[in-house]
Length: 622
Image (cartoon, rainbow, N blue to C red; front, side, top):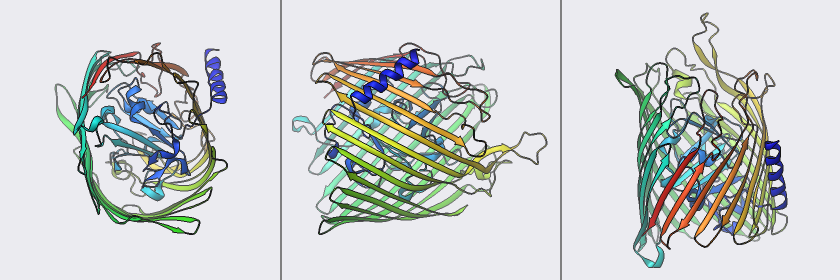
């Protein structure tokens, strides 16, 4: 009955007070047409003209969030599912539209973050304090980015330089806080802009005692976590263009439960780039970027000699040139580019047949706008020296039915490259694997009848072919050896509805419904650990000029825990609360509680999701 009332109330709220979900709904973002995104088309474009679903999580929404974990922040947004293997510092599986975490491309400032061995991103390495905004481009985007962008892209943009209030040369903030289960954190950042030079620098430190992540009773102790991080950005504007560089570095130690091998890990990560943009004229520019990614996990157990290291190094080069043109009533934009990166691994966990590979791609995009119509198209060719080539494309259209209502439709393809573990894991890899391939069709609408009301709806279907799954090796009678095979074909259908509405200057309602049908086409059963229904409802209330309160409720239907659909995780309802009080125009106190009612639930079988977590922090601007 409680779940029924929750979801019914949510549906009424969304239906009676709609608002756009194609954007974060932060109170200070009141003009949809002015929001500029870079992720979907790999260039600046307006969110209002997007031909596929895009969500932007701005700095205001990040600061209001009750969590210190970027993965937990994402789980309330439409199209995003998060399977947690515990609390802060644990592994998290972030999935877009029912695809796996390895079929979701995660970027930091456009730089790939996934390990080349397992193909997943260590979300614990990315601190919220370093993030300016997050752009989530849902659906296939391989025609722009190449491998792995089947379910979509999560692009995390770190804090950038900019002007300061009252014309000051430098400004920034300092934050300190404590949390229960017992932990603490501190962060500081500084930014500025003068004479065409902009800079940003930030640092943070977080530590927590944690709790026992596993439900099996294995190693019944608290699993703690500590992480230090630094981010930087520098840019210099000239009459002819701009030079720039940015990066994120983090170092951490996390504890986990394991029956053998390591139960602690030291992690190191760096993602950075440097580039130059040449403006040939007002309508034509060329960009050249070099990037470097580094990811290391060193697993160990106290009192036991030896470690198990996994290191990924990825060096990239990107060049593109784009030009806009006007012919009568037609507005054209053409982008041509090429990308090359070399990724390699180093490990002492066994001898891989190959430890390095080169990947390259060339791509082109063409966009056309005429009157109320907007069209996007893209074509890309990728070559991987290990498995061969792949061709992907996308076609999209958007039409402004009225100034308030826009409809869109798109069709695109994607692919995922097998990882080093898939191909060459000692005694188990399969070098004959083909890449996974997908096709996706999407239709949607965005309705903005006023600055205070927004609604976004997306309906989609994805077909996955040659999905890679690990299964027992038929030649091994013991059943101990598993190998990856191209044996999975899947079909995922889904519907996303989200919106917000400001009833007045003080009270804003938000809500969303996320339904999907993730099926294995071979068996007809649901894919294991894929969320099938999610609903959320939120209230943002400015009680006084100094005090604001945000409450968000989330309902998740339990996914099946096995491929045979014989075991199912329980459904759950959680409530998060955050209250912020401005002591003066530069000082703010924040009290937040995640999972306020301390509900026990799991999104990954065998692992306990975080219970009630209370955080108190103080921020001072300068």
